[in-house]
Length: 104
Image (cartoon, rainbow, N blue to C red; front, top):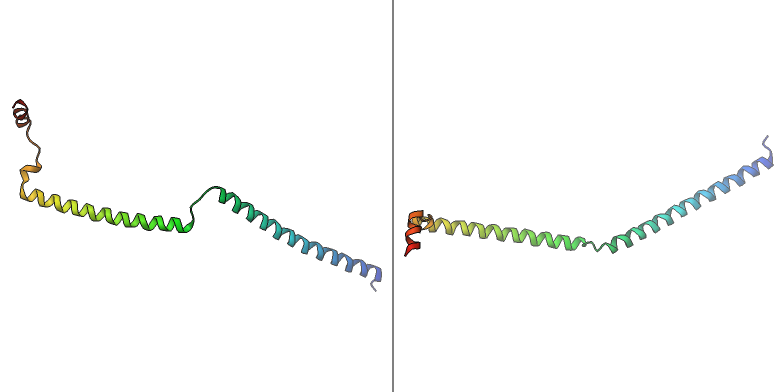
C-alpha cells in the first residue's frame, strides 16, 4: 500500500531529523561548556575568597568573639571587686571638692 518512494523519503527524513537532534545536543553541550568556562574566567578575575578562606575567617572570628566575651567578664568581675572595696573611689568628686583642689 505504501509507496516505496514515500517510505524511502520518510526513512531519510527520520535519519536527517535524528542527526539534527544529536547535533543540537552536541551544540548545547558545547555551549554549556563555553558558558561555564567564561563564567569561571570572569569569577577568577574578581579575586573572590575561596570557601576555605571564608571558613578560616569565620573560625577566627568566633574565637575572637569568645576571647572578647571572656575579657569582658573579667573586666566586669574586676570592676565588681573594686567597687566592693572602696565605693567612694568609683564615685566622681563633687564640684566643690574639684574647685578646692584646683585652687591649691
